Image 1 (tube, rainbow, N blue to C red):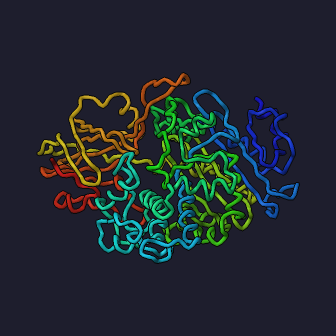
Image 2: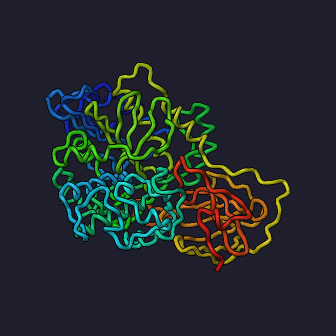
Image 3: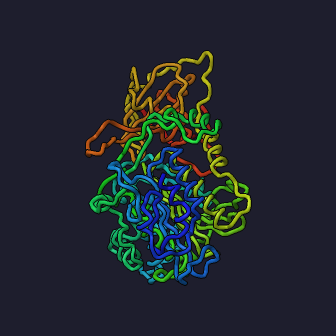
Length: 585
């Protein structure tokens, strides 16, 4: 196998270059100290193969003053390490392959707001723009259900995720930023202003509209002019169609019929490679959305190559275009994300402005993660060591687990930990233990007394057209094998046109209580650019209570923060307590 033949040679690579374990050694020149050892590169590729992941790119940067594998040439050491397959045509991942960085895009948005602040922008009432400027003073259409929050939310509140609104990702489909902002009035808050951190993509869609309103440029236009072009991020774009036409865009992949119980069993047995019963059948979902992506640009629209990732990490570690004071502003913690460390090796995470901050084994870390269907990314920077990296993966099922494992493996190597953890063991166990599951149904469930079929409506979420079905069909059945349902009666299905959900399944539990599961589906594409069926996966789940007046949704629909108490399931106060209440029409 080529990777083992060349393993002792790959310790040397080149500045601003790319390594692929399958690449011939003749492509490697201008030796520079490698930022990843050959042993770690081999381990990463083994992980990729074991979990059935198609492609990975890792863009790394280290300052010449860094104590971490500093450059032998006395300049920045920029490297891209790539693995596997980029797309359905069999092309290999290289330094030019473009991946969606998803929510790692939020930093470009907050930096754009910061540049407008730094440039003494004047708002319509004649005041100078500040981070403390109220959103209502820039966007007259801005309204929230909580009147106090509506009047007092400022730019810091939006960027640091503390308006009181949970995620509500399932409230809309592909609509304009202005329509997203207008619809926020119809979404229920889960807490009061500035009490809790709650991840919210709509905040960053609102910030993108703020940039547009103040600069007369769309966010992609503003970022290209003030960030991409000055830094030299030549292949970075918000436009998915443009990325495809470059010939370097990766494809997203999704396993169909994945059985996490089989994965857990295989992992516990110490298998070197998961079987098909775990991984399912991998299919290409192409790209999650085409076009300019304006509707979601502020929250997660950037597409970037590994080569540009290295330049972007370098700029954030040692700003030459952006004001250093602005980097310090966005990496200042304004909200506590989870209150408790995720692992003993980590400190509590705080959230800045499109960035999170924590310590890893006592060393400061800045960064973020991101995901859209078929694409996952992770940014990690060690500002005190002058080193950082970005990881992108084109796998929808195991990509999130892998980029966390890989990131911590790299951190342990960079920090020269003498006895590093087996991060695959730690994180895989945590992943399998946290999988959603349904409670066992009662032995003698009470019947439900109302006909639940029909149309339901919520001003924020739109319509649900619930109909009984004899069978879910193989696509939906395969998708929900991740979270097996306990079925005690008829099955109901509704199609919805939302960003991350295309179908909702309702199955009876007890009396008026039903289990609901949200399913994401996408077209499956072959190497001849022909549609070859469908792919699907579960997106969210919870409890629904049907009454004669409507249905209340509980569980995981609105996406509350980890420190916010859950919605209370009370059959007597369904409409009052529900995360989302749909009136029967």
